[in-house]
Every structure is written in C-alpha cells, then in structure tokens.
Image: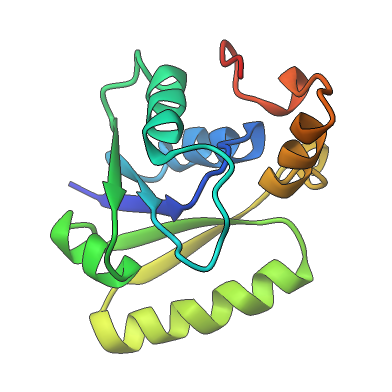
Length: 150
C-alpha cells in the first residue's frame, strides 16, 4: 500500500489544499493529512477547528485520515508508516523551499517527497490571503473546499 502524508498548518485549509489531496489520491492508496503545530506562526483558528474543517471536507472519503502532530514532519511520516510526503507548490519560491526540505527528508529519513503543481486557478490562493479576507469580514467561500463554511 502506498501511503503519504500531506503536512501543513492549514490555517485554514483552502480549495488549493483540497485539490492537491484529491489529485494525490490518484497516486496513493491512503493520505494522512497532518495538521502541524507551528510555534513560529500565530494561529487564526484553534487546532480543533482546523481538524474539524478538514474532516468535514473529506467526510465521505475513507482513503483520508486527518491527524494533529507536534513532532518533526519526517518523524510524523515514519509514525504513519508513510513512504511519501505530498506537497503542493504554487510558484518558484515554493519550489526552492520544498526542494531543500525534500533533500533533507530523503537523506535523513529515506522519505521521498512528491510535489504537485497547484492548478492555475488556485495559484493565488493562500491561507494568509484567506485570513486577511476573514479579518475584514469578506466572503471566502470561493477559497474553501466544497461544503465548508467558516
């Protein structure tokens, strides 16, 4: 069985993230979405809310598990018996960042990283932009997975 993790802080989980996971299901038998605790980032939504929103988005998908983690991503992948880390990239800056981490994860943990390019219609969507819109009481429904309302 090919297992992958899809790690991130997902504050919040956007339609771009959702799209990467759905496309990842064509490559992997099971994906664990790992919602990491990043002490360096100020959280907009509490971890419980983020987990709940992602679970809602995939409530009918038995190939998806959603878990919280507070360890190195490479250790989380090993804990989940995942041979792969799935990541989405929107632009060149994302690529440079992900390439460096992928090299370390492969060298230190033997875990391969699979990068999927974000679909063009979602390239400009980020959790940061969604949070900014929410701070000004703007509608973010077009940025969210189907059926998810904040």
